[in-house]
Length: 252
Image (cartoon, rainbow, N blue to C red; front, side, top):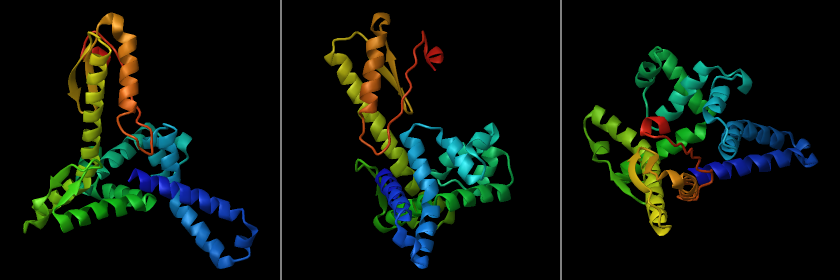
């Protein structure tokens, strides 16, 4: 998906360059086509740029989906956009989103529809995952890990719907799980290779918890930053935060 996002962002730049070509303005039909495609690709290009620049993607989404200037995005709009951003990759229903946000099913449906109108390629990508799951009975992560989905062939509607959510979510969340495991091994090996007393003791979702000797804190921070950043080569940067404390609660 990230390569596709990069490809679309490059296409957006190409279209902008075409608008600087005088010959385009001499062809009304071509100008109309370029402007229409630019309009469709603008939210994709802005989202890609936000990822590249480590901006607040939830605020960007809120601005684009709810059609308000970025500087006027309220905390509530950002929370709503965040729920949609994360819910979409789980194949969330209008009912589920409504429950999460405390809004009506009708309003939640409108949120989801606006999101897919703004990011039509996300919809095509998710639909493509479900189609792949139906065709092969499985989906894969970016690293080739397989998730069988027999539920997609079930005669029960609820089971099939569950299978569709698995098909949409597994390649995304599964790839994230692959990356944190790669990072975990890299950090573990680096701590041993450098002869440190500090040890990796726990993973929590996308976090690594290191029991660190006080005198080694700065070195461990450096190792975590380098090895987690380097765990995967993607079109967007892997952003990390490093915190320390006398216990896990303080480190959060």
